[in-house]
Figure 1: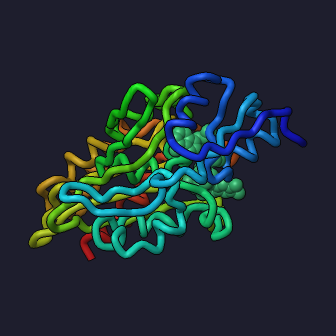
Figure 2 (figure 1 turned 90 degrees about the horizontal axis):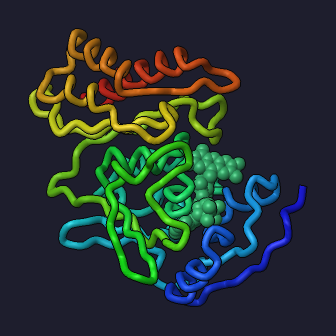
Length: 284
Ligand SMILES: Cc1cc2nc3c(=O)[nH]c(=O)nc-3n(C[C@H](O)[C@H](O)[C@H](O)COP(=O)(O)OP(=O)(O)OC[C@H]3O[C@@H](n4cnc5c(N)ncnc54)[C@H](O)[C@@H]3O)c2cc1C
């Protein structure tokens, strides 16, 4: 299929892009890596009158470190994150998750800002950002605001971003000693969207877990923070009883929908299997 007709503008700076979004509102779509948007245009799932290309806007790409945060520009590609030494040092969870995103060709073009904005619950970055307690920098002509990843995702493909706003960066709290992390997912084939995935963070001291955070991919309408399982593991040595309590807590934490191949019950089972594997790997 071919897309509906649209006008295309390549913005040269952020103010120009924001002004175009203000003018055209819901009739405009931002074009970043195009790895999701072009497919939705071609399938006519989306039919904007305007495409605002932000890829040449300076300052929206790259990974830097401030006193308090690791800052990833919205146009930074999945591949750049996968290969970044700063990410490996300060947010290794992202480096562990990156190889699970599609295939190399898509990772070379797709951007973290596009993934966050699209808010697919089966995508890796949103769940990682929820686990890492990241925040998103969101710019409008009227000013800038920061929104926690834990409140940004509101429903299926629904976020706390208005049509006239652009995500400019992802900020991840900088930890003096980064926690250990594990990312795991189950997919039918490598590179497919996950059936279920888990992003686990925690410290291990004499076999006991602390500062535990657990984000889930594909286990609800949004990326989810598994707060019950986190509470069950916090301060505990993860023996069989503790693991059983954490897995049981997932019944409340998760709300997966079925898909063509997997029922909600199967996804719940797989989520529990992944949690046990991830905790064991974190402790190893
Ligand atoms: C075959 C295939 C397999 C894939 N598998 C996976 C996978 O396993 N896991 C995964 O996570 N993803 C997967 N993807 C999606 C891929 O990761 C995309 O790159 C990503 O979801 C969107 O990023 P993008 O830069 O390509 O955004 P685009 O496609 O350009 O845009 C996506 C949406 O976000 C909006 N947008 C983009 N940037 C911004 C911004 N800075 N501020 C506000 N709105 C913005 C656009 O208007 C559009 O609505 C796959 C894609 C393909 C084609």
